[in-house]
Length: 344
DNA sequence: AAAGCGGGGCG
DNA sequence: CGCCCAGCTTT
Image (cartoon, rainbow, N blue to C red; front, side, top):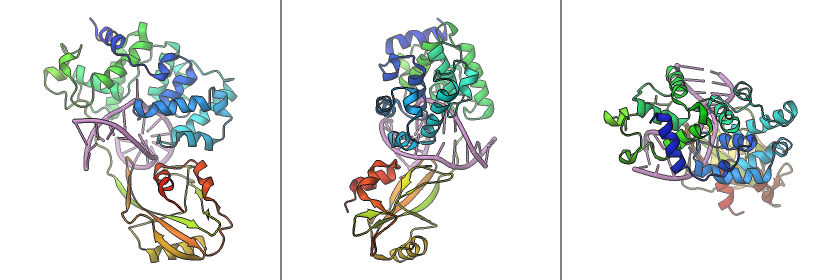
């Protein structure tokens, strides 16, 4: 039996019931694929359901305010996915009359859709013979064929895509593509796969050469940077606080936060008072540190050493908003965790 | 080619 | 604590 036939047969037995497996509607499949980029299935499922409830069709999504889209995405991370999703929804409505384009080439032009996602959408929705190469597929192919080319090098990316195209099943591309990804997720797992029960173990090069642990090969990423965040949580006598939207480049674009003072290192209360007066121009009374232990919020590429400072304003914050209303805004998990536990 | 972009789960 | 997750975009 061929590689692809074994994958298909395995998939027929081990296929999970997932919310997006009951449809081939391009809107639903597109949404699920964006949400699952660099994201575990288990983490994505509740978001997928919430999203479809709020935006049943691409038209609903297109006419929603970005803030509502980001709010529903809150906690899932990589927020450019949400912004690009929204942009693409508007393009589909305005340019494509609400009908998802059906060719790989056209789909690839849409914001937030790269090679993998374009292939996934057109193969699953329109049964087009495009191979998907996600993290799971890299692992399955690298091990089974014994390929030690780095999967995140330019040549490696080309090689694996070409290999994936050679071994795919054109006749059953919809199930084959989902099958090889599912196989990578369940059977050919990253750590300690149970090769004894693997239907491909008779010809797996990595298993034969005892290199399962070493494959796939991945070039290591850049070092993690440390940053020092000081959030200024102002409170006035009317229960108002200062609140702002993150602009420009960088993390958490367009999401909301308390005024942020970033410093080169941890600072003390006197420095905070000085920064507040200089940058915000508010008369500050008592200043207290909310978290005595610095909160280390870890992103994939940055560690944010964070302190929340509570500043009691002696004059009304005329530019402030009520404390209760901040809960409606999209915020990063760092802020969300704070406002959930902090009591005025 | 390399860096930037989140958050969580697991061994 | 490091690695990985149905990757894409920008520099």
